[in-house]
Image 1 (cartoon, rainbow, N blue to C red):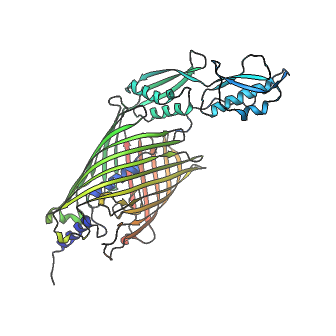
Image 2: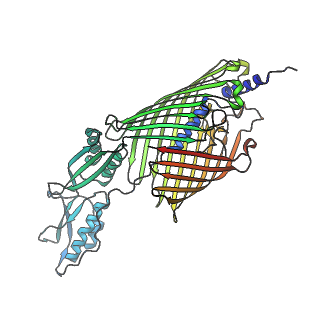
Image 3: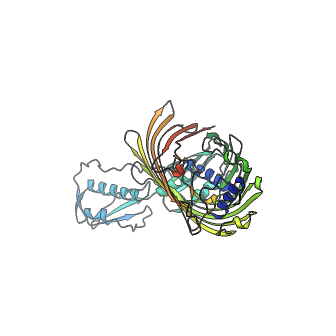
Length: 564
């Protein structure tokens, strides 16, 4: 019987699972660690709710004061006119018909004019007004003038660094794209300006110098142009450092194009893991389209159980993206995104002189947003398709590689996320969420879907299991309690369940590997938060049901962030 050094056997197994996708539970590598940080950032990204109604339609006067005069006359037809005398061809038969071919009073006329006013305001003409001018009724025909509210002057009072020509381009693509002042376009302009960080904006309307015209004033002021933050958490692992600290900064409106510069650095308590990230974007047109570039560098060294391997590696990402505010209304936000990314990954085990290098190029197309779907409820959604091409190289001996090892290949993944938060009486809310990933092939470690961690099944650590295809179902009941002067204490009960397949294709998979996995956990959480100041998050979660790999250790999660 041949005998092998134990360390070499372990090493051979580890590299095989990374390169050939044959064994379950590979050790941590650059792809897995990068994916953990990526999913954490996605979870921490602020969800933006729809604004709700910004510009209320002027009060509807349904009950008009009665006219004391009892004058009556016969009405047979109604002609709608603009102020210049041109006839309006809009079909308002459903409103005018009940008044025709009968004798009516002055009260009836006033009521008819108000109903026409309401019709136009309900159909997006914010300042529309119908009125009856002095006239003689001939042959039973009544003339009613309708002021739809044409936009006259637009004045920009700019006390910010935002370039005025960018503001005017937004004006031209919204309120000035119609002949009349349209409520939806006015709201869109306000929402596009609200999306620009580092400024505060306000819109005001007043009667124009010309009859039937409305002037718009856009007021802009500089807001806080930078935000710094420091955070700590225990979402790391024993092999690279359990506790992590992040220090970052966001700077807004550097060159007046609504631009944003974001950079941060993360390090573990053992300094075996650190990550540098930078992102810069700016607005390129009056539609709010944003172009950006980003870069990320991660470096790690494994300790604890893998210390003898002297394993280390790095990941470098360089990408670009275009985002577009496809829909901006008071009740719906929809953003579309096109992104490109180049990734280089390197892993090595110096103790046995083994190396692996990977290059991954991806193109992704996605949609995401939020919707006030029902009263007191908000639905959040995102859908993203990734087309990837990757290449592998390794100095591992050929007979150690799995049979389905491919140095070059392509892949496609589809990711989705859907959640709904419903606010309930007595300061409660309930959130239901589902997310997941589908793919056409077995995936590299950096593109797998993580079932555990604070963004998934919280009863398990983030690196406990990764799958090619998987889904996570979550339910959470929250209670909101105001404390101190500006803070909120949010307590919660939650249930998480995740399931999936570790490998899409199992033809070459060892029969000893259980491909299908399912994780479940329940827990409680506390979050003390003061907006724009601090947030402290505590959560305790316990695995339930069949334990994955006999893991029965409860998880206690801690994170805190201070902004300045």
